[in-house]
Length: 101
Picture 1 (tube, rainbow, N blue to C red):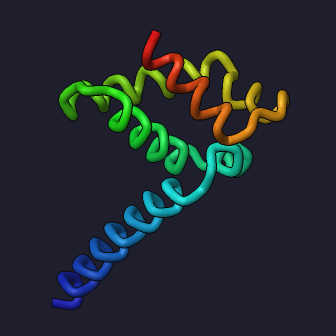
Picture 2 (cartoon, one colour):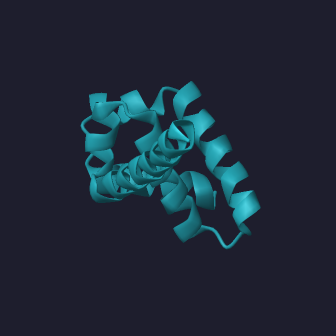
């Protein structure tokens, strides 16, 4: 019985932690997220952006988010934004340009 109670508490904490991460990602600007290097928070914010820009179904939006995340990561775009002093809005607009091109 103790195991069941511990499992339920662990699952609830996990769900609450995921909600806090999503809320934090939504609240932080792009520049802060990239400086923090919190991949999950960056992913969450990128996913929100993809969902707001694209009219695709949710399963395609997940694929688009994954492809975009990997593209930005593999081309060192995230570091470029920080090194070049992009503002949060400039980062958002640049990412949107990848989605609309």
